[in-house]
Amino acid sequence: MFYLLQTHQEMLSSIELGEEIVTAGGILGKVSKITDQYLELSISENTKIKVQKTSISAVLPKGTLKSI
Image (cartoon, rainbow, N blue to C red; front, top):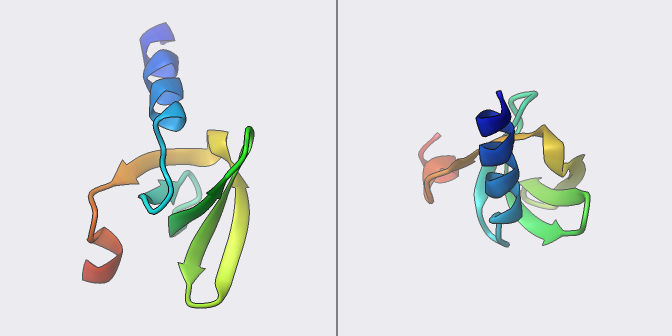
């Protein structure tokens, strides 16, 4: 269990602007702003939301959003 938490924390600390991610709730988006505890995601043209970093479940390969 500790290994999974450590791996998740490493993933969160390595997220960069422009990366495509998926939240635990299934929301897909591109990172447009990063703060200590939150990310701003662009989920469609002219639509941005803020989510807690801890709600990020995976970083997706580039181009995933366009292929869906």
